[in-house]
Amino acid sequence: MPNPGLPRHVAIIMDGNGRWAKQHAFSVMMGHRKGVEALREIIRYSSNIGIKVLSLYAFSTENWSRPEAEIAALMRLIVEFFRSEIDELHENKVRIRILGDINALTASARDAVIMAQERTRGNTGMQLNIALNYGARDELIRAVNALIADARDGGSSAEPLTWKDIEHHLYTKGQPDVDLLIRTSGEQRLSNFLLLQSAYAELFFPQKLWPDYTVADYQDALAAYVQRERRFGGRTT
Ligand code: IPE
Ligand code: IPE
Ligand code: MG
Image 1 (cartoon, rainbow, N blue to C red):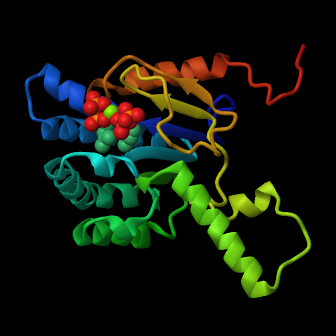
Image 2: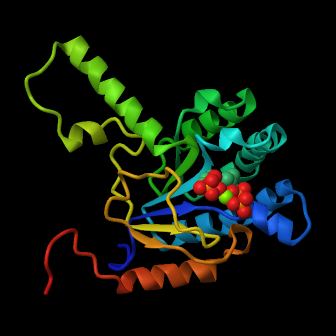
């Protein structure tokens, strides 16, 4: 049984790798590498305490506008991440799902994520969503196009579409909504991450840059989450 006050779905916008690198006079890539170390700890801890779904924003549909060398290095980092982590993740029964269109990734990154998804498909532990080439608007466009195609194939039904129909075509199909959304580095925006799934998420914006973010910081966010009063539009007083 998970703790009653534990969020079921935690989403994290891991931001601040570039500023961390600059602070330390390192290359941007060193920032991303340190970022992966932080992420490893947060994944491990989340799985240990019984978080059901953890969603990590790793690469957005807008991140393609970054310098080519940074993009290439990030693609290599994705391959490395899965190569070094997949055994432990699988052992811990973590199930991996990629959110986003993986066709645009480099062939080796695409192969790595397909392999990780396939290998962990039957696992019953924490669901780990990794958002790669993900954007909420892109996700919605895909869902709407899929619904239009369904309607064409099946002959248009007279029934108006419902939220359930849309949800059925999102990358997060079958998963609970985001309860807690954390963005590091002090930026207070969502940058196109899980906009529909976060409709009633509690938002946290810690100042720390992602490579400096620790399990203790994460515990602070989880403790603060328990204190929040979630009303979902209703009235409790
Ligand atoms: C977030 O760190 C990681 C990715 C977008 C891949 P940034 O690279 O955005 O770090 P800042 O915002 O420049 O500090
Ligand atoms: C959001 O961070 C994307 C990821 C963390 C992967 P960005 O650094 O790309 O977002 P903006 O440009 O500051 O909004
Ligand atoms: Mg950033």
